[in-house]
Length: 328
Ligand SMILES: NC(=O)c1ccc[n+]([C@@H]2O[C@H](COP(=O)([O-])OP(=O)(O)OC[C@H]3O[C@@H](n4cnc5c(N)ncnc54)[C@H](OP(=O)(O)O)[C@@H]3O)[C@@H](O)[C@H]2O)c1
Image 1 (spheres, protein in one colour):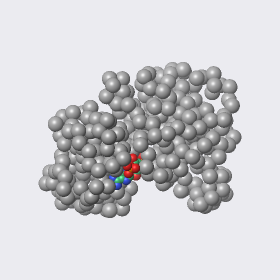
Image 2 (spheres, rainbow, N blue to C red):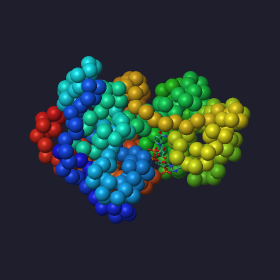
Image 3 (cartoon, protein in one colour):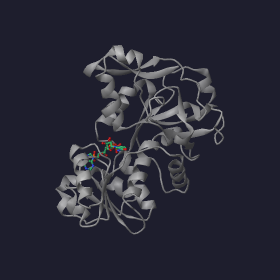
């Protein structure tokens, strides 16, 4: 089958559509999915691409690096213990474990990491959701977002942020989104009650306090947002920034409410998101769509850090596999 693999080493590494072995037969708890769409997350560049870049070819040849976590597609085979899915079901989900590489025609995934795909969504829209929307849901829950609570979302216009604004809204929170000037109307249209333009000056000492500050840019830390959280607000981050990683445990030792969300895919959470989509509370925002053969373009676009919503990769690319096409 066709899958995305790195070519070259170091800074010249590019992603190429290559013939690779079929995935191993699904284990008892796995399904084999014909991938109709996948999506790109900053982690794909920060981690997967960089690991591939700096791993000697002799190693990557033996242990091929894996690209893509999110998927939407059709179940084409299932393990002996899989009862909740059947061949032909449209599913969506994600897994960051190496055996699941979604930038491929087919991939194996554990049955607990997927759920049925919301029927009102296209494969591209569904593939935009699993990692980013579960990050938003899990981060908001960690910060006790809920009815009547004030929530500040820093990075409201990006992959995670567009979901966070809509989910916090669905939870009944009073939502303030932080974004640049060009995105203020867009973030309001997503359902934010108020918007702060971060390009208009340092808002961090002028706004709040909020019950929850959810930093989905990973640029902020508990200390940089201390005025925004006030005495009793939560600070939750998607991590990444060294100050946040060092500062969060220290801050907690002082009795403050701070945490980092580390996303994991759970069937229950995907079902919660399914319900939000089908009740009209949640709609994925697609920044741009690329063919599988142009995975470099998708990674480059995501790498600008300026995306409005998610970058999606259509699963068929130039792959010419009849069983894959039949399953559509
Ligand atoms: N820990 C986890 O489990 C987890 C899970 C998912 C993501 N993450 C991390 O979370 C971060 C965000 O992920 P993502 O997918 O949302 O990224 P993304 O889609 O690339 O974010 C792009 C958005 O960030 C906005 N932005 C850039 N600088 C900003 C600033 N100073 N203030 C407010 N908004 C700003 C941009 O808007 P403008 O163009 O208007 O500036 C753009 O809309 C990444 O670092 C990622 O690695 C962690």
